[in-house]
Image (tube, rainbow over all chains, first blue to last red; front, side):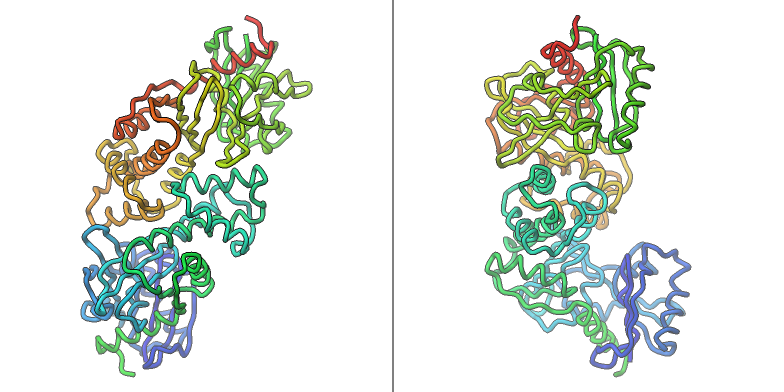
Length: 288
Length: 288
């Protein structure tokens, strides 16, 4: 048994896992690293242990908890690297009964870093091909011979939040409106910088050329479409594994279908638990 | 003499102008339309008149004051239109001694709208060629035979504010750092969506490939470079007239120089005063 924690910047999820990485008990909290001071981490972990009845279990955490602003800065493992290679480089937090998983870094252009996604990758059964992990900072990962050989980040989720919270591009509405989303995907085909294509959504709403209620879904479609359209120009062709929140992978599947690219959708949370269990086993932290 | 007001969303500028459009007295205030309720406009105008000793002068305003959220919604003049064509379509605000200048709209794709820039265009002595008006929502305008035949908007200034205020892409720093700005311009050449190229600035800072202090200037260079690079693929080649805040037109001139495109820089405030004076004269609002 293992206490596994996916401890991101905004939120955390924790679970007690069985030997196969299946969650027996779980919790989710808004205690992301960006809201915590250094002295906050140890008491939060104690409170997680108490809530999940996991006082005596070895604990393994991935995500921003290992970043500069996290509990302890854990050096990245450079590419190429197999996802399970991180097991040899875990960082033990003194006195906490906790190990932190290092992220991966591509240190030559295009430079890129990940923290947390490596654990999801460790939970996939994939040695070759492309994986897209949508999110605040989406990642497109290339796997060759069981190793990650490169990846790129797109701040698609963050841009969506910036634009819909702090600008007048889109009125409030349903981000999954299918007609609006498809209109956004189609707009992503134009060779325009996003500063022009995002603003065009506002203009078209103003001039009645885009229904008011479709604006926010059009923004989602445009940003996801721009990411997918570009990502498909890089790396090998072939099916894409989408690993993330099911509501999100569904949107990406729709964008890929527009390009005729097949995909398989994997639940990102389940992949993270499977991956953390495998990393713990490889590091002989937990005995199942 | 005329009381001229450039009344935008965030700020306003007002001036008492002589017959040539030269400001005799002027003021600037943060009383943009977005901070005002409908009942606020008349008392603000009275206070402007009092401060500038302009109680008895005809007044002419351009900008967001004529938008849906402004004092009165004034219909756009459709393209093609000469900048001075707006003089025939001024909106008189009852009882206020104020006329509002309509904006221009391109109602066929690429659809675009402007409010305020038409008055700056009326202050330029240009019948043919391209004008760039940098700002929150930059405009690139094509003039043919004295008429505006098309334009496009880029939310470059707004995106810069969104990214630098609400994201961790760039640390605080000098937005005019020359090396950082040039590094950003160079990054704009890559065929990447801005969600990838903006995020790469953060990654490269993290990995030490871009000096920490250059991040914010790199964001400015990237966003301006993406705008300029795309705008130069549209419309006729030739010199560009840059009309705006001198600190801003200087940045755009640097981006244009990278493409070998000559430009002329015109102060945007002076152009607005000249243009409003010309519009007032064409509408016979002001004499002398």
